[in-house]
Each structure stands twice: as C-alpha cells, then as structure tokens.
Image 1 (cartoon, each protein chain N blue to C red):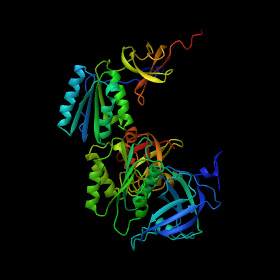
Image 2: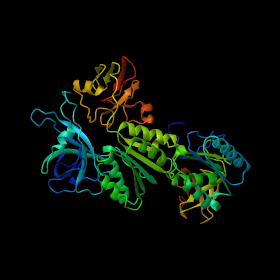
Image 3: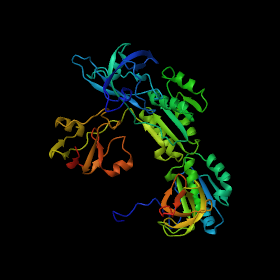
Image 4: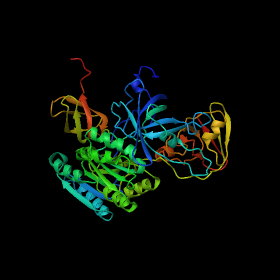
Length: 342
Length: 182
C-alpha cells in the first residue's frame, strides 16, 4: 500500500488494491460488493455521498479494455473498516458491437478477488450547516442517498427520505426501512411515476426553513425534482443532485485550443471532444465519466468564449469563464480559439 | 477602491426598499420597532408579497423584547419562504443573524434599515449591536464602526472594529486603550 507524505495509510486515496469479502444480490440487477484492505488496515473515512473509482477490465485482462467506473459508497464514512458499493448491471445493447461495460465486470467479481480502487472522492457531500435534510432517491440512485441517511442518523440529524422504485427492484429498501426506525429519520415510498411526482410536490412544499435537499436518480426524476423545488420557492443552492448519466449531445462546432505551456494549437473537430483532441496531442487530462457529469476532466481556461455543456459547473463558475469540462464543453462558436492553461 | 485600502466587513444598506423577490412560495415580513418609516416599508412589502403568495406580517417592539415571537415565526416558516426585515439597524442586524441561524440563505433575506446611511456605515453614529470581547456579550451601543464607545457591561472604553459578523449579527469591539502602557 502506498501513502502520501506523513499521512497514515488509512488516509490513502491513491490507486491501491482492495479485496472483495462479500458479494450479494439485492435485486435481479443490483449486486452488493463489500471491499476491505487485504492487510486489515482501516480504510480512509469519507463524506456521505462520496464515491469510489474502480478500475475495471471489461473483456478480461487479455485484450480487454481498461475502464474507470465511479460507484457511490453506501456507508456513513465514519472510520470505515470496509467499503460497500451496489452496482446496477447495465448490459450493452445486443448487436451494438460494444463491449459490456464495467458494471458487468463488477457483477463477475467473487469473494477473494483483489481489485484496484481510487478514492474515496467527495462530490455530493451534505452541507454542514443544514438544519434538516430531504433525500430523494430513484432506482440505483439510492446508493448515495443511503450514505447520507446513515450519516444523518449517526450524527443525530433530522432527515426525510423519498424513495421511488419499481416493486421487486428496490435495492436497499430494507436498509432504509430499518433506518426509518431511528429517531429523526423518516421514509416515504413511491412505486409509480404519478406517485413520485405527487410525493415530490407534497414534500418539497413542507420542509422547515434551512432544509437542503439531495437527489440522485434517472434524469427524468432529477428534472421533476428541480421543477417541483423551484415551483415552491426553493433556491437552486438548496437543490443538490448527483447525476449518473447525461442526455446525448449534438456533435458541436469545430474550434481550436491553444495550449499555453507549449504554444501548440490543437484543432477540435465536430464529434470530437477537447479531451480526446488533447489526448491525441499527447496531453493527458484525467477523466472519468466523459459525459459532463463527474467534473474529473476540468481544465483551466485563460481566454476565449465557451459553450458549457456539462452538468457540473454552477452558473457563477460558468460566468467566470476560467474553466471548462474538456469532455463535453467547447468553444462558443465555429472556428473559436480558446487558450487552455495546461 | 485602491489596492492598499482595507476590505471592510461592513453591511451595505439599500437606499430604497428593494422590490419583493417574486420567486418565494411564502413571505414573512418582520417589522421591528415603532419607527413609522419601518412600518410603511413593511406594509408596502406585505401588500406586494400578498399578491404573489401567502404572507405573514409580524410587527414587534424590538428583537430583544420580542425575540420569542420572531423565533416562533421563523420556526414555522417552510423552505421556499422569503424573509423581509425592516427596522432600526440594531434590530435588523440581530434579526438577520437569527434568520441565518434558522437556515435562511442570503438570497432568501431582504432588509431595510431606517437609521443608517446607505452604503458603508463607517462614521455614522447610531445604535449598533456590539460584541464586547472582554464581557463576551453583545449589547446595544451607540457608535459607529471605526469609532469608540463605552461598554455598558465592563465600562471599558471600546474601539468598534470595522467588521460585522453575519453569524452573531454584531460588530466586534475591544479595549481602545489596550496598546497603551499603564
């Protein structure tokens, strides 16, 4: 195990190996995987809603591709002896020619397997000044919500959980129902779209002043959550969300990027991302989701008008114009030149 | 502002009452004290807010005397509310701090002060909430940021520092003679 500087190994977040000690099916499509340090060391604590980056090799080590997939940790993050993640299996469409993704590889894990992980990373943390917490989960979006709920229960906070699921496909429903027995924790369930919309409207309209809400789920649920919240006066800074997928984007216009450190100019064609163009030019930018959701590939920008197409940066950050997510965002218009501070 | 000028943490008061934020789902208008201008502003806000969403107008004598009433109103408020506060600077600063304690965000708060000079308050003497670093208590004192006053608790001659704490709602003050040798 590696450790940086003076930090104890149990604060390590760099790539390292963990061992699978438990594999359990929560639903026909969701598998729960529990990881520990092979040497028995305590694992790095994390914020509620944090995720782990797992290196997966769909197709196998021989000839397969290496991917990095982010999975939300379901624990409360306090002095963890183990990390638990729950993975929804997403098969590639038949005949698509696409290799099955990281989730299928994750479903193939067994007890005793050793895998490479990085993190935990926090990008969906609770506000420490919240007076009350409203959690909204849709489908597999329950994983970070469970982490938030467990942390709120541990620290004696008050939390209301809304869980929208298909009957028979509700991962961690038993965990949430057990948590709801804790003082300060309540759970409301919805099993149809109409029920979910009605529940969102009803509960967002009746939360104490100072509540912060956190939602994770499919794009339609998150959109409904934002609409319902804004309709009853919630300001955007109270409506937190984590996306695990993004709508498809058009190919965009061609533009060019000037790399400040080398003076080299990189042309970015329609359908090609700045991230890919930089990679082809030998400039490696760390990336993860490649769909503008995770924020991993952010690059500093010195000048040039931008078309932000990500789902990460706030309006204030966009207006500042000093950074962009290189996987989806582009120059503002055809032929635009931007300076990236790399 | 020149590059060497200190950045002061002072409230900036609007010259005229701002229009009501139309995105609220409910409104709580708090009128503190008996100043007729504060009552007028609160009434105008309440009338404007009522055209948008359910509105409650609460008039009290001051935050010190009627804090329980303000507490009850803020406790009953739901997220989506906009809180509007009118009154003298002392009451408004402490009431805004109380609303923040209840979780109100800056964009959910609006205020109007009847006894302050719009913009920076340096040099303008008025009733202020001042936190005495020696008593470790907040009192109403008459003075101005950068000015001096006497603490009603410990009788020290205090310098009011030009920094307002949004959390406490008060200005920090400490012994103005502390650097002088006895």
